[in-house]
Amino acid sequence: MKKVIRILFILAIFIATACLLALFTGNGHLIKAVSNTYLKGRSGPSIDEYSIFENRVVKASKKPFIWPSSVNYNSKKLTTEELNLHEELKSVAFLVFHKDSIVHENYWNQFNDTSKTNTFSVAKSFIGLLIGAAIDEGYIKSVDQKLGDFLPEFKSGEKAKVTIKHLLQMNSGIDFGESYGDPFGFMAKAYYGDDLYDLTVHKEVTQAPGSVWMYQGGNTLLLSFIIRKATGKTVSEYFSEKIWQPIGAKESALWNLDAENGLEKAYCCFYSNARDFGKIGRLILNYGTINDQVILSQNYFEQAIQPVNSKTLNGDLVDYYGYQIWMTYYQQQKVIYARGIQGQYIVALPDEELIIVRLGRKRYEEKVNNVPLDLLHYIDMAKRLKN
Image (cartoon, rainbow, N blue to C red; front, side):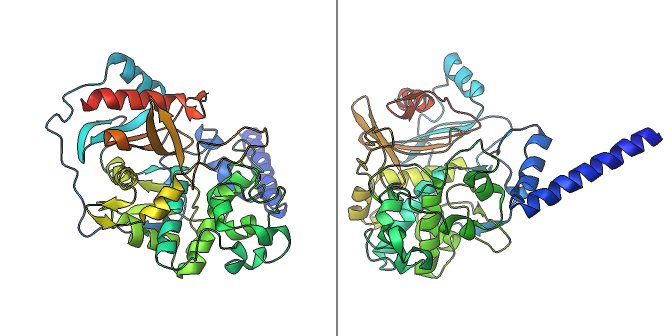
């Protein structure tokens, strides 16, 4: 017994020392990271862990849009092959909407139509939409406005050349670091840390703004700081006012914060349900207008879905990304979509009047023309199910 107590005492000393070392070396985020990943048998974030963070409520609409069910609602079932794919990739929700009604709806593992899950990087597209709202209202002059007009850290040097458009298109030239596997990196500190502003605004420009495309969440965070500064409102409050309520969201959502009463983790971490996410798809499908109500100007939306046409560090042309949103052509049809790292998708196919929402825990790493392979399978499924 004494030996067990001695071992536990040594272990406690070791853990306490490790925690102090993490704090004193500027890596205090590791305490939260390790306790919520490895100690829970995971190697990274989960889709259902909003309760371990501070959150801000994104208020729902007082007059929500209720999705009508199609006359063919769930009349077609997923095939065995399709079900196997969903099970392999640990889907929790798969919904297909056609012509403003639900055609197909499937949930797994005790998730349902009100379950909240993490969007991960789908939230980047939400910020892209919100910048459009701020421009429409005159809080921001245009996408060509300089960051230095809002953030003092961007008033001099190469940083003074960075515009809002550079952030929207992910070619600001600022290298934040987008490594998801580095426990000491920017993304780990952004997700588990408690000071997003200080972490983000002091990064330096390493490439000429506008010259190189680098997909990095720090760009989205800077956009969110601009929204807060320009409007005088929190990102959650402004998103609720300009997007979430106007689209008719039925349920209030949650947005993770870096600290109590802090800043939204705007590059990710928006929690809501599949049906309400479908209403974002409806907004995208209709280029910013719903039922003759202009939520975002068509002019901004059309700009937003133009390809960046910058090149990556490897020299590859980026013709598949716009203002914080993805695009492709599949079977000769335009596809506009938001995506998250674990296979979260909100997809709009305007030619088909088709919307797809898929939520889950995994996606394929393989890509076809920079489109995750699993997304192409979901589009094939949706097209079959809608007919």
